Image (cartoon, rainbow over all chains, first blue to last red; front, side):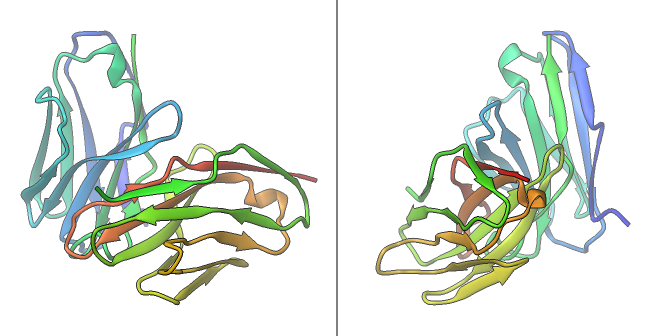
Length: 113
Length: 112
């Protein structure tokens, strides 16, 4: 069974479009995260949710809107996509805060043309 | 702010060579320290971790010791294999801080 899953794995779209990435975890964790990995492999936190409440919003443009319908899901919606949004987006989950092990999904490679 | 600095790559080694990847950190509190590994085309996996000073994390032949006096958490493996080719990330988190802060990643290639 996959612990943290993301869909889609690849996403190719045009500038200006709106797209969503879905994330689900079956580990019973109460905290979920979105990270962005750029072309140089650098990883940066975007959002963190604990028990469905937004805890961290790391100066991400408001074109990015996370939504957590329940503790097992954290989706990422992106409006008006720009070229600079091209990256790999990773979902992760853990218990409590980040001082416990975070489990990562396989990533979604977003390419904006 | 909290940050992690790790050795820049890429690093290319021969099989059975000794691997060291340096990692140092800056943190306002007492962080937990992690090494994550990313194999080609995959997500990140926890390799090892240490939650307090002088703790040693170990897994799959890799080791790292939490050194508070030098604010370091260097990763070592005595004899690498081709299957160890990956990107290695050092990371930290502060208690009750809901995020990991990552270093820039070090790409390691092991040649047969």
